[in-house]
Image (tube, rainbow, N blue to C red):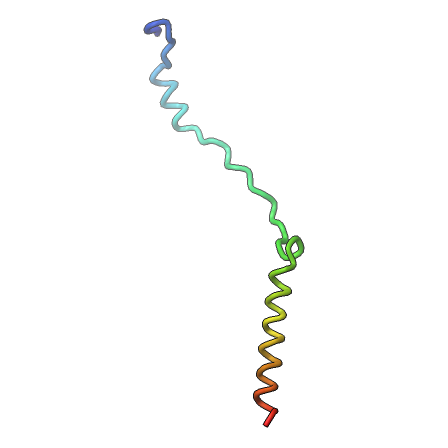
Length: 62
């Protein structure tokens, strides 16, 4: 069926196309962000070590 030089799709074809599922989007591989950017784990470990040191100083220094 053509209208104005443009070919129109059949109603049955349109229904079948709307039911078919598209492929799932590609997933990126899980990356180890701690190995790529070690700043965060180093900062967290320094904060923990600092808090332990401050706790020990407060507890044992008269």
